[in-house]
Length: 357
Image (cartoon, rainbow, N blue to C red; front, side, top):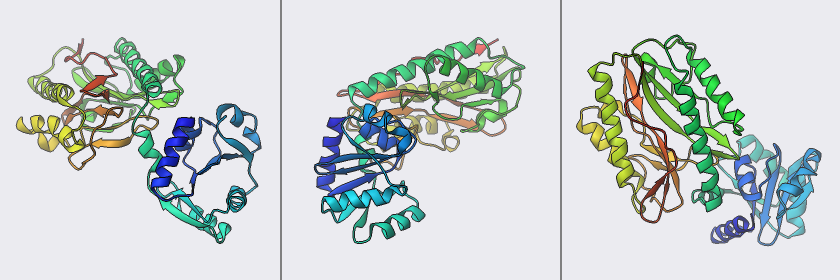
């Protein structure tokens, strides 16, 4: 964690910040290692404080040895004021995308002459590049998702409820070490597979239809995100195979050609141009992928609006899709790490057109 604090201070210095108040739980865990449900980090040029309440006064020093742990006052902002005044600091940055206006107003009124300075995504920028230890955890999370897919294939059949499939997947992941699923598991069958975010419902899986499974394991603080689409039954029609093959071609093409130095827009075009060429461009309405890490959606984005440059250490998804209302949809997704000369694929589940008779 010391290295993360040093990098944070470098960013703070470049931004002209004497102090930074971190309130977002994910950023707090990233910088300090503290996993409690309540706490704030206050970082200056030479001090690092973790402010929390009585419940965590034993846990916090164990998890965040690089921080001085302080039991804050009933209103934590009063302790922040006391610490800043003691260091003679007149300005403190806060996470502008994480603080609601009511909290900002209360903090500003309480700090008096100390100015609150809005800061955009300073910790999130550090989180974009994963170190080897983070990638190792994400590989385990990806392996857990792969194992879950293998497990559910043996249970997926006509007559089962989407929500029961999702429950079984979550139980499997948690029984093997996951804290939870990375997000609400998507199990979308038949016409519902055309819903890009069709969270599992009470619909019964029918014979001869597509089933889209989008899920991930939240493991040791990091997310995996895997999508596979299968056909349940024994009589797929030509349209099922057609759209599946197009999505697979687009996804494989992207995995072959994504490399460092490419922009998110250029990476997105690798899948979008193929799907458009086959006449389905209007049915691919989301980006090709997104950053992945401690949160399920992080920077950078692989989309036609993104000029972010892909850099070694970034972890992103690659997930093109085609969604035909009234018929069904296909998405295929893997998690990858940008390397010095290409990518490393973290997920390994099979993605041929799978017919579960």
